[in-house]
Image (cartoon, rainbow, N blue to C red; front, side, top):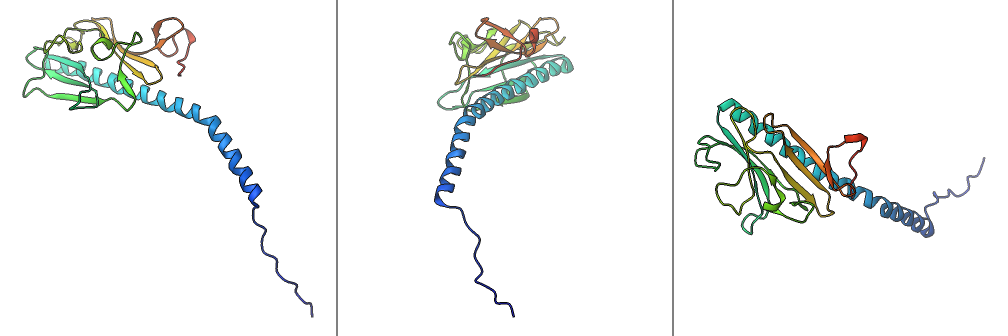
Length: 205
């Protein structure tokens, strides 16, 4: 009869092996973290610009559908409301203000670490290029006023930035057709361009 020897247990990892694995994982994380953070920032910026574009188109369609005016405006953050937003409403009496009974078409809140800002450093009111004066208060950001024929009263753009100074704008021009386009700021050329213009893709800091 064959005598069985003692059964040896499975060999585990040594402390040195575990430390090596942890060190390699830490190095990989250190290398990939900047890329991941850049991707997250780009995603936030693209997301808010896309939502603002949809809101603009919704306002334009409402103006045509109701044969009235529709307004898109920035609402900067305040101590009482710490999150800035973009909102659109149907301006049935064409006074440029959101009055009681006028439908709010939608709102887009700014994600964390994204603000209303333009490359020169201006924020809130100064971040808006063009558009129409705000009838509620001249100190407030200008507003986009879509007419009943689908045109924009004055061309312009709403501009956003993240905490790494990546800038996007949602621009409306020309006035007659009110074409809405998202553009990114090019530091080298000091100009705005749509993704793919001239074969150039957006890059992010």
